Image 1 (cartoon, rainbow, N blue to C red):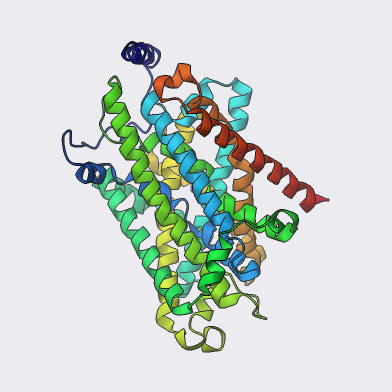
Image 2: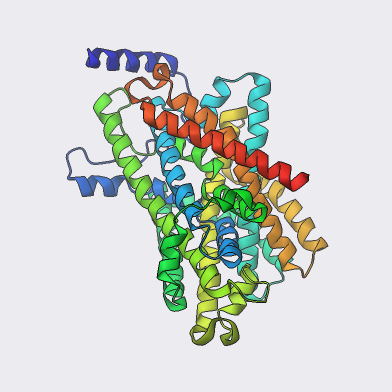
Length: 455
């Protein structure tokens, strides 16, 4: 009976999507996977998309919120990093399953199942979320170029407009090579911060205690603002769209239940492994901010401050070294540039899925970056020389991402819980209920944040 149900579901899907354009069709189903290999060899073949997703969870926006959270509130917000990472794993697993089972991405399905006005509103919100993500990449990369090469910040920000050329070159190498390059950049970031945290000698018991949630996070407005910034920086709306698309880069038979099940299994395993690494990086960032800057009299916790402090023995003691400062700047540049790849792909599929707008990748990337870079440049020119104000814009962008998140979460939960759409791969009851609880709590917290900030 179960086999018959599966077959009915597969036939219905083929009927419904026979003329549907594939999501990111230039890379869709472009990578072969072994049929009868062992577990680890098969997992290795599926490893890659998770790295691209994880990069979005450790972009420069995470740095400023996590380091700032540690500098202001010591280890208390580690519990927010942990909960955000668990939420990310749940949502990305749902996103991957949606793409693999239906052969469509979240943007395509959202547009198909909403009115023209509703679809347009959701597209605008999603595009603003992409821009907010881009703001973090622009500011982070611009500051990294300033720290490494002495470029004025305005010049560094302008240079980031041309990173599209780097991406176009990488796309010619093949998607699997892009995954390998991104994974290498992630390893660089992980190594740098693991080394620097090791030298900072944090309070081990304080770190462990920080992973226990505290009620005061909800009642302390500055702490709540920073906590939601961490959530927005960790659980990225554009990654939910991207995950539903690049989960389809491996070749599989969408008409075969076992092939779909196998693809889901290994794709989610890859995603969880990479997101665990992202959780470690975000924890290291917050721990570093707490260990070095909590309780200091100076305003620390920003990129430039941290760069300078790592070579200042008066602040960080005997571990101070110009080498640590340069490692920090290199990791920041690596983070900004690797995040650019995910932002580009997400921007492309959102345009194609919501408004069916197809344009050359370089034009799409330049258009998205132009919309993002203009307000940042205006802000940088107006506050020339005031790094704190510019990085404050970065923190605000991460809070906006937290506000935009439910607009991606709610359709994702609805679609993956729809048995007619997902067949035997629909969410289990406990997954559905946990996801709805998370969405409701996040919406309530965002309303509280907006109310207390305005009034």
